[in-house]
Image 1 (cartoon, rainbow, N blue to C red):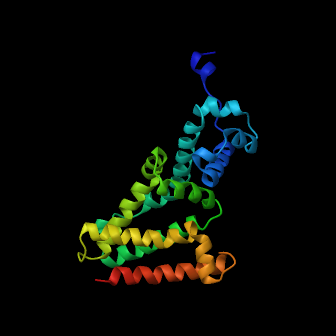
Image 2: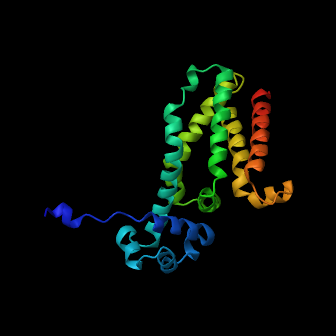
Length: 215
């Protein structure tokens, strides 16, 4: 047997990373316990040390796992997406609407709940984990959205203005995940199911049209 085969690490169990994301999202880096994470993931404590070197390494790996999962959802969409520079303003607006709709679908999915708790903590107090998340998917997705907004404006806005508009569009989608409890209280909904998602979609598309036609 070759040396490389003798020393190769066994495959990482995604259950450990998913559990870590859940625990870190709820308790933060300092509050989460690697012992509890290992117990909940039904694995040995030594697996955390072996694969990640300890809690800090596991935290960064959890951030990378989130980035990879989101990128899996959006990479095919971005790969097939048209270049904004070659689109008319109307086509760019339509493509932007499709991207916002896909983003909403992801954020309202059950799996995004744990990711969001983790990311919200990193928004409040960014660490190296935020850089990982940003580089994994947020950077590319944000850049594409800004290009679409800029093209949809048909020359009315400068890049700085397009960036601000893109952030407001992103925020309108994000609020239904990161401020879900507030959204439910304001709307009077008990939960966000298919009917509620359709209402959100209608409102977002209406807001998008208003933002793109504003001066």
